[in-house]
Image: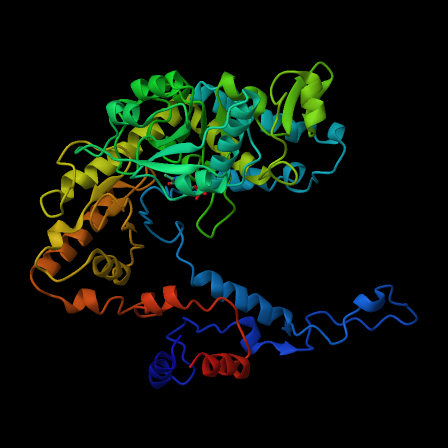
Length: 521
Ligand SMILES: *Cc1c(COP(=O)(O)O)cnc(C)c1O
């Protein structure tokens, strides 16, 4: 917070608090060195065995009493916008309700209090739960193998692409190119680049989808894989996808599908039927587990038969004497099937187990029919928004049905002098977390809205009415409402350019920070 902001708030109240909303400094700013919530006497006559490694000076950690520590974290938690507070329409991120039943089950001691190093005979139920969740994923995707250890979608992408690389290595081939459409999420090219591939960008056609013909033009014996998102990040189903998969396979390459938008086709379309070789599934998007500050992600990857030997360990094997977790490559090699030529291990231990419990809870409480309705309702919600806003906001690909998210561009702001960012900031004053903005990059000033199936019609109607009011205000020249926004949030608009150009990534004591600032001048 800038000093002028401080001053402004100080002018408002003595403490800087507003009503019962508290200012909250950093731990380092208010804590007291040498104070601790727990006071234990120094033990006598214990000789340090750290030798030269022993700390010469006390660690400069700020301490609190227990109630102070409690308040610090509760106040911070109240500054975090959450799906439990209001509509959170971030496109592509799928911020849907996290059912409380999932939380209840994840807290059962038999799931919550186990340790990954426990003997396998004592955690047969947990292994059974992993296997059961994988069975649901296999069924829903028509893909024979699941790697469950990746800890996010991006991590799953890396997992899938490492298996593809291992498969090419096993064929004695080194291919250097990965094809990525221009509307792709940034993690796609980042993954390919991290693994040493050259990224070649594929343009979309007028309607926002990728043409099989364009893919064919880019294919060669040097292409390792195509990474394609379906439905894509414009909220559109890739209608050439089967033809694209065939062309990729004919060129000896693999088809990686970014499955972040699987929630739009759940129970309707099975990626395995489309010719996909590997696809990550964001359990925290499609299967309702908490994210966005609420909990860890989880990105299991489903694989085709062609890639099954190359998947990472661990692997759950169902045997006559119970379930076994094969944790080493030597074990899967001996076993000869799934993971026989595994590229190895991706993470310590076995992935986000608590997330598996929540995801399976969601799958089983919805059931097969319910999961189909999830995608139907998600698509219905997005199209309801599209139809109710299309007279005022601009649709880049024409007024035709979308999947689970609706994409607007900024041409409805033409002549107002306002930008997508201004519009998004004004939504904050109205109590809405803004939608995804400026992504996908293929659309100018993109606004990508994903309402999900968990919003009621009343909630959608209020959101629509709010956006309509904002658009009319923008077009009627009420510039202040936008350029000054957010006016009602604890923080006003930040200097985003300064934040991006010279980010302050580490707290320093005020004197040291001043020193650095002076040195910079
Ligand atoms: C969210 C998302 C990812 C990355 O997933 P994380 O779980 O955030 O790592 C990749 N691609 C698309 C299209 C996404 O929406």
